[in-house]
Each structure stands twice: as structure tokens, then as C-alpha cells.
Image (tube, rainbow, N blue to C red):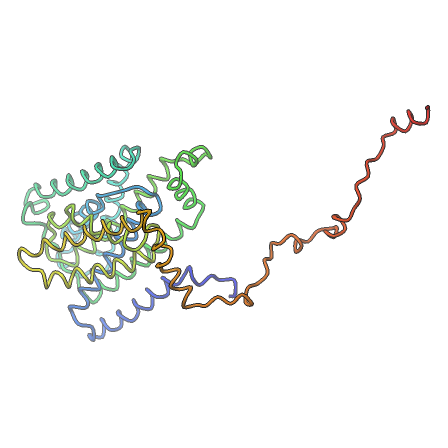
Length: 373
């Protein structure tokens, strides 16, 4: 028990405890409907942020088409639920729709990622952005019988009491898959590609393979979030999954810290709550200010994290320094390093090795020559 690093499982413990708490409150009817809907949106946002963090934070590639994969999952999963069960209250149908929507989104991630991930930087961002707009346009111009055309696809609204629980369950599944992948040898290869792609390729890492793996896993969970979104609403409209929504997901990742899963969880929760509050405050033409706010937050974060003039401010005011002030360092509590050279078990005492006089031995030939003389 002492060897277990509880820090690695802290997010699992916290989310599991919250899931049990809200599940009990929801099933007993204590939780308000508005709170249930907010928690549904928060779980969807967490899945989106954690999955995009794989691409942006750990792989180091900029993707602006995450809303496109969510759009695929929302339409495909919603259509499956409509064809099989019009009421949408079957647990088996919901799980089937989630799996189908996630797999179709993953296939789209493979199809787009195979040629696109050979690009870098701004070019990859442009391609993923174009993919999101193409997907949205295809569903927008579909026939009313297939995906609802401009009016959107009518989907069965799942019971909020149970959809909330499914949201937390798939948050835990997403965390389990993504965290274990990142902490494995494959995760070390992924971060090596982020740090230096040329050096990673020189060591034998298959760049295309790992980029595709990250893109597929990220697209799968974006599709899962899309299916949950479709079951949390009565209608799925393509205008929801526009460029601004992709930027909103990207802000969640950047605000939480690049390559930080826990940070993505916290920022997704805060931004979703802020989004709900701003929706009620900024109505009508003022709703445009909400998108401007996200863009402003993203710009300020990029400046703060990269400006050389702010290096001293970043080092002085950060979460690690704040935690260090709370937990005062006690030098007496420091343990000796078990890897020190004098603690390494050897057959010969190290002091004997250091005190040994080195004498050059003469060979037999040299002795014979000296005897002949």
C-alpha cells in the first residue's frame, strides 16, 4: 500500500466520488433539473477537452476540427437511436449508439489523419478546420429524410437522471484510456515526437503510426461526446459544431495547461459553467461577445506562456510556487538518496578500492630480458 502513488489516481477518486454523489441525488429526485442539465454539459466538455489534449498537449499538433468529429458522432449516434428505438430510453440502445458514433468518428479521424498528419503547424490546423466545415456542410445539405437538412436531426431525449450517470462513466473511461496510454511506453514515444520529431524518428519511432493512434483515439472520444450531446437534446443542428465551438474546446485545453489532463478537466468545468452564465446574461446581439471573450482568453494565455518579458512573472506566480508556499519545505524531512554511490552494494568496499595502490606488473618476457642482462 505504501508503494501506491495515490497522486496518479486522485482524479479517478474525485470524479468517482462526485459521480456517486450526483447519481444518488439524481435518482432520488433531490437534484434539480437545471443542475442535471449543467452536469451533462460539463461531462461532455470534459471528454472533449481531455481527448483534444492528447493531440494538442501531448502530441504537440494544432487541431481545429474537433467539433467536426463531435458532429459526426452526434448525427450518426442520434440516427442509430432514432432507427432502433424512437423513445431513446433503452440503456442498450444508448450504449450501441455511443459505440457506433465513436467508431464512425474514429474512422473519419483515420481517413483525415492519414494524409493530414504529414503536415505540420498551421497547415495541419487549416486542414482540420476545413474538415470540420466540410462535415458540417454535408449534414446541413442532407435530405430531410436522412439527417434533417437545415432543420436538424430530431433525436430522442434521454432521461436526465440516467444520462448524467452515463456522462460520468464515460469521463472515467476516457481518463482510464488516455492516462494509461500517455504513461505507457507508447505515451513516451508520443511525447518524444512532440519534443523533437527528428530525434524521435532517428531513434526508430514510427511517427505516422503514433500520430494516427493519437488522432484516432481523440476522434473516438469526440464522437462519444457527440452521441451524449445528441441524447441531451431534442434536435441536433449542424450550426452548433462550427469553428467557434472548436475554439472553445481549444481554450479549455490551453487554459488548463498544455499536457495537463487534470488542468483540462478543471478548465472544461469552469468554462462550461461560465458559458451557461454568459448565455443567460448576454442575449440577442450581445451573444457575440461570448465568442470574443474566448478568443481574448486564448490570446492572453498564449502571450503569458510565451512572452520572454513575462518569464519572471511565470516563475514567481504559478500553481507549483503557490503549493510550495502552503507546504513549507522542511530540510530535516528529506531522505537520503538511495541511489548514492556509497549505498550501492558491491563485493568490494568502495574505500578499499580508493585506497588501493596501482602497481604495474611485469610480464614474463620482461622478467626474462632483465634476468639475461
